[in-house]
Length: 508
Ligand code: BG6
Image 1 (tube, rainbow, N blue to C red):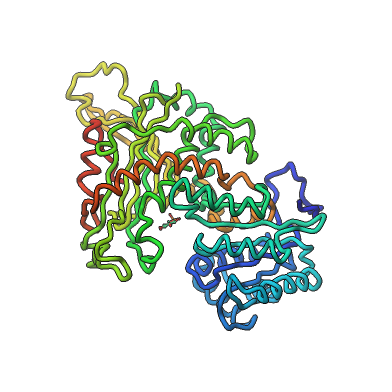
Image 2: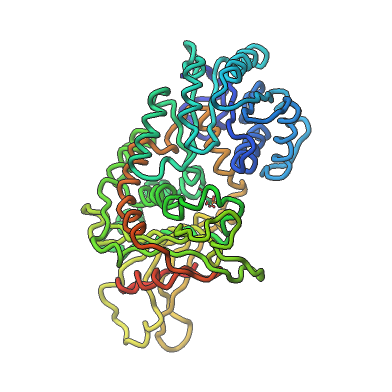
């Protein structure tokens, strides 16, 4: 554990900035998109906000013939292009002094010996205190090789009073079995408290705010159940296609990429019971209990939908279909749109379907949770007065345009009684002056602090696969997914899925 105590920080006072103690990070996969677009900029942003220790060190490891300066240049370019905060020369200079690069393959013993020596040198010259996080921004097929090498070369084992942690990115497997295997590989080398699985949705302010909304207020929880809630829609829509990620995405698809992790984590936070505290263990217990109550409808053909985007128009541009994207197999059955109906078999949610959907090349980029309420039990108006009234709804806007909307009926001004939907709005920008940090800033800082509540535990990951596996098996038997035109809201089968339940998808 980290023995370093920041004298300025009362550990009980969560309002004070949380600053990481002496430490360093080793980044595997420095040439990948994730490192360049998210990890490196987040590290700079943390340094710029004064949240990293002065001697923080970043060591890149990759199969490249680079010197430290070449690596520094790569980080520099990534920061310039993607950092959230302004570029400050003095911050950059101090940070860059801690950059090192170790060239090598994952099976190269000499390289891992060099890595060990590099870390020892950093402990000496930068005062990193033996505290190091190993960030595996690499395909999961290599996790075994890398953690095996870390173990072999004595890198996984901390000296007394210091820590070693491993950070892994999704996909955490492609089904229950492979997820178990992956967890086994990690657990072989690192104790569970030292394994940090990143689900970057949990690093988003708006996602954490679900807990504040539900458990810091009196007015929502009494109606947060099947007496009042008709159904819940969780949407993560993207307007982008797969970009240059065919190698990763083809064969994975929308359900594995997003539903198994981000959307099921969102659902857990929306539906779970109140945890006894916000420590990692209490949260895990509640999320796991919730996921254990989730069941699939019997008729998967009626309760799920999937699609593949075809060519179309997006924001005034003509775009190609999924099968025409570079690197995608021409006969691919990979879905780029997925929708599933889930039930929660417990007292609070019996009879309330949760509809989860995600897709690429949809009408616009939006992630939201919509809790849709039942109609009022009685309407003492004549029918025409409420013709335009729909269901009350509470919409948590995860992104963009972060905030919350409550939709309810209101009288239209005039001499007659006419009731129509109106929206009451909370927008982060209107209430807070601070802009939200990027999810990766929060999560990397938490890794360095050893603060685990925002990281899913292996049992949650496995439960989510257990829920999803039958859907994936069902789809695998069905051949090619339905097509939907780029820029629309998914395949007609998804609308039919809702229509069978007498409901409609929101058009955010
Ligand atoms: C990633 C998925 O986890 O989340 C991507 O692999 C997706 O396919 C991305 O584009 C979306 O993240 P965000 O934060 O932009 O919603």
